Each structure stands twice: as structure tokens, then as C-alpha cells.
Image 1: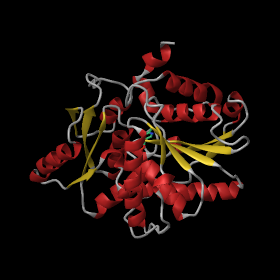
Image 2: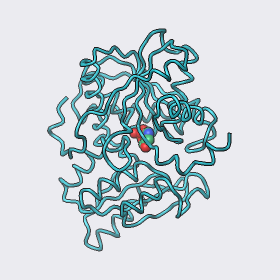
Image 3: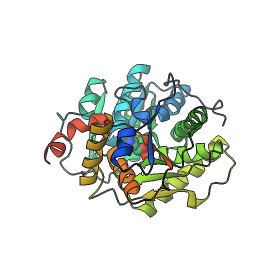
Image 4: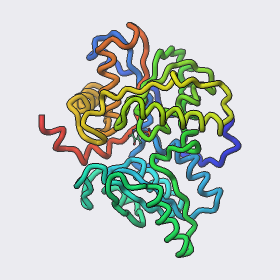
Length: 334
Ligand SMILES: *Cc1c(COP(=O)(O)O)cnc(C)c1O
């Protein structure tokens, strides 16, 4: 794939590691060998997947002469934290619009990502109610800032447009290179599927390098049908932008929605189990909202015999551990 036509910042020094998970493999019965791609170790304050997308989104913002970034997310958004992080590093102002998806969940003095927004020097935080038109809210903020002489640039939620998703097409290429170096034959990749840029980008990149490894998403909020349609649309847009010509069929987009529980960001028993298993067996910190639920899906699929015996499965760890500190009661309850 050719990324040279697009403005891009270089935020990664090296590929993130791919590691075997021997103790977790053992704990789950040794039927399937589990590996993890450590995107929780990406650069950017406290790590996580948005950094790969922001290489392209902030690259585009700078190419357009922006001096201010506006983005949106949930009240404990990792994306908002990483956008604030790279904005700080680039000397850009950063403004956040936060959607209170669960009523009463925004606490000005909360820990986790919320505290980090403050520490990373965001210029303003506006909290709006669930279901608000986030793009309209960001446009309004952009108009205000432009009237005050600023040059604002809007990054959509999760940086999940075709620009941002290219970061995960690049990740699929990186993974394939590592697997070839390791001579490791992965049968299946599991990714969290939220605002969809990670999932869509991975599918495009895998097609772009002819890797032929199936990729499945584990949903964190929507139903299977709705999420698959969103991922597929973004997959086609990203493939078009990058000029990846391999026709990607609708059937290649597969999402599991049975690990969402009562809703976005709301804890489930299987998420708590997954977070504790990864921590105690492998000393890897997941998060309660995304990687914890995706890992709960991975664990259940392994237990159910979804993957062929003796196959190798790769879990994409997208980060998010700062959110753990906003959920301590959930983990101490048991
Ligand atoms: C945003 C996020 C995801 C989901 O990625 P999308 O590209 O939005 O689907 C997964 N894990 C973490 C920790 C995230 O912050």
C-alpha cells in the first residue's frame, strides 16, 4: 500500500510488539494459542489505538494550516485523551465536546482519562447530553473559534473517518511483516469494534497486503447488523481513498454483539473476568469499555471452540487502561 500521498506525522518509533500469551493460553485449556498485538504500548500519553489514526488526522490538520483541534468522545474517552496528547506535543490548542452517554456519568473531578484531559492542557471541555448531534456541536465550536481568529480542524469521534482508518491499514501491513519475520501463521485476528476505524482499517490493510487472515470485531455498543453496516461503509471509503483494489465482500465484515451487556461503558461480569485474567496471568492491563469487553469475547469464543484446535489467534490490544481508575469499585466489588 502507498501512504505517501497523504499528509502523515510520524508518532511511532518502532512496530508495537506481538507477544505469545503462554499463561492465558494455558488457563484457557491449551486448545488455541493466544497472541497479542500490543497497541496499548503505542506512544502518546498512556498509549492506545488512536495514535495510529492521529498520525493521519493531525497530519491533515497541519497540512491545512490548523492551529486548533476540536474532537469529541464519551466522558472517559481514550480518543479525547490521545488527541489532547498529540495536540500538546504539536503545539496545537485542543477543545473537547464530551457526550454524557450514561446520565450522570460526567464528573468534573473524575479520575482516569478525565483527569488526564486536564493534565494535558485542553483549552475547553463542553459536556452535552446523550444523543446530541456531535458534528453539529463541533461545527458550532469551530465557528466560535474561527470568529476569534483561530484555525480550527475537526477530528470526528474516534478519528474514524477514511483518513484516520488508514492508520489501521498501516497496522495490518505492520502485523503481516512481523508475522512473516516470526514465521507465525495466525488463523484469526480479534479486534474491538467501536467507532469502527480500527476494524475497517485492519480489513482494508489485510486486503491490501493479501494477508488472508480473517478479522472479527467485538462490539462495545451497537447490535451486530448496525455495526457491520457501519464498518463495511468505512471499509469501502478507506479502500477507495488508499486505492486498495481488492474487492472486499460484505461477508468479510463480522461482528459479535453478545459481549456488550447492558450498554456502552456499562460493566459486565465477563469483562471483569477478562480484565482480571489478563492482569493476573500476563500482567497486561485491559480497559473496562473496549479491550476488556473484546477480550471477554475472545475468551468466550476460545471456550466455545469457535477457533480450530491448535490454531493461533491474535488479539489486538487497543489500550485504554487509564479508564480502569474510573472503575475501581467495579473491580473491588467481587
Ligand atoms: C477507541 C477505542 C477502541 C475502538 O476503536 P474504534 O476504532 O473506535 O472502533 C478500542 N479500544 C480502545 C481502548 C479505544 O479507546
